Amino acid sequence: MTEFGESEPFSIGIEEEFQIVDTENWGLRSRADEMLSKVESIKDNLRTELFQSVLEIATDVCEDIEEAEQNVTKLRNELFDYCEEKGYKLAASGTHPFARWDEQDVTEKKRYKKVLEDLRWTGKRELIFGQHVHVGVESKEKAIYVTNVIKNFLPHILALSTNSPFWQGEETGLKSTRIRIFDSLPRTGLPMHFESWGEYKNVEQRLIEGGSIEDVTMIWWDVRPRADLGTIEVRIADLPTKVEESIAIAALTQALVYKITKIYENDNMNLPFKLDQESIKENRWRALRDGLDGSFIKREGGEAFEIDIQNEIVEMLDFIEEPVEELGIEKEIDKIKNMAKERYTGADRQKEIYEKNNDLKEVVKELSELTKP
Image (cartoon, rainbow, N blue to C red; front, side, top):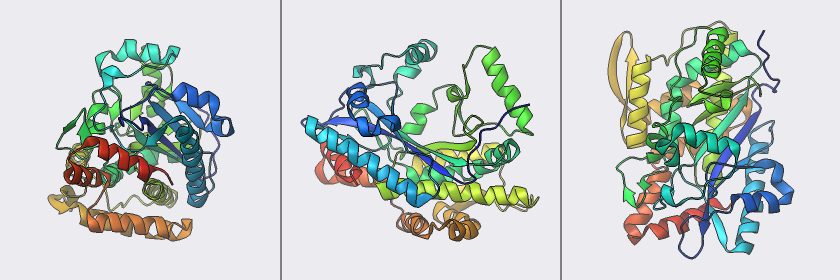
């Protein structure tokens, strides 16, 4: 029998991966280990990543979105206070606009050494920064159902969060360059459709027995069930720059998990959003390319057609109207509505700053200023 961790239903946890930047040249600084050892007040909420220029914060398990916002604000502020004493800062976006991956210091941990031995060149390029949102679910059956259904909405979350239009000094033409870099790794992208929890565990076990992974944390899908935590983990978003943007994306994720769980409990399989895997993959591509400026594939009554992303997000928000009220996240979803109405994401902001200054250092500088609560 597979154990499933205990989390309060719809509790929420947020992980954010930050860039540590130099205030003189606005490039990256390798200071993660230093910060992990020195920022005592929140050290239990800090994590190192593959590169020493990346520092992750992980909130406590929060009862609601208000507590999550308080957590994120506190963690960002404490890190900024320490950084500013030392002459560097944090910045939040999906990629650093001009830093080179081959100039970064690797974190000295056995896990990361093994990762690079396995992934080689593809692993060395993973200088990217994302947001991961955990939402509590009650059982493994609900977890696998939510994993299957929420895939329909992952392109929407990605489109809203796009925040990485630059890579190694070049404007790539993509709103989320981060996702395309991440896609070069194995075990990324959309997971398959699982008929049952048992089928999912069989896949996980084969990967372990076959020597590909040590545990579920080495499966890097856009969404994955976390039996050890009792959560669904949605991992597709670029890291939003402002606190209110990060919290809005997290609240949207929480509301989707809530709605899909209630559909499962009511044994109602009549979903308004139900696409085949290839159509979802195509929408994912359009989201990372165009952000909020493009269109998605939609299907109704056996017919497929294009729909403006803005209109598709409006339909999604109608779908979660009930949980928005029950979870008390009206303010956060109003932020999502405004982003969709204005067709404006972090990627658009970065491009706007660059067009104004023609200097990627100015982009990083302003990103840092906006990252601080």
